[in-house]
Length: 75
Image (cartoon, rainbow, N blue to C red; front, side):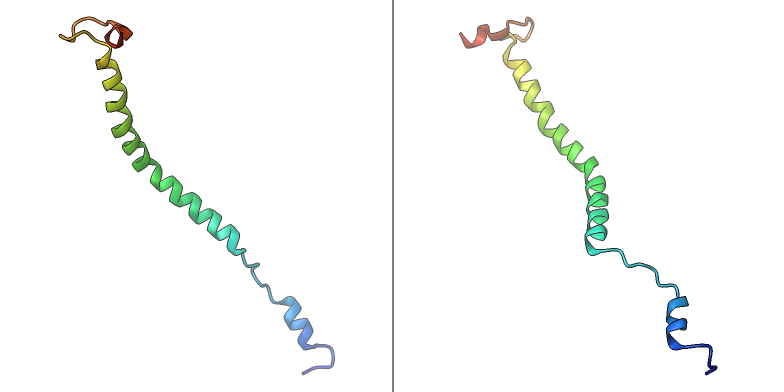
């Protein structure tokens, strides 16, 4: 070891990549998970919402489903 170099100099010059915190890693993983689940959630939402609103529409037609009568079926 030369008189001008020390162990501190070597450690100071070594580049250490800063570690990402666990919170940041979990946040990015959960964001990716949500993004990957969105198509499935949209499909399930459509499979639930379409029949729901279509049944409301059908309930406002007359018996033969030819004319829109609105809330008259419920009077």
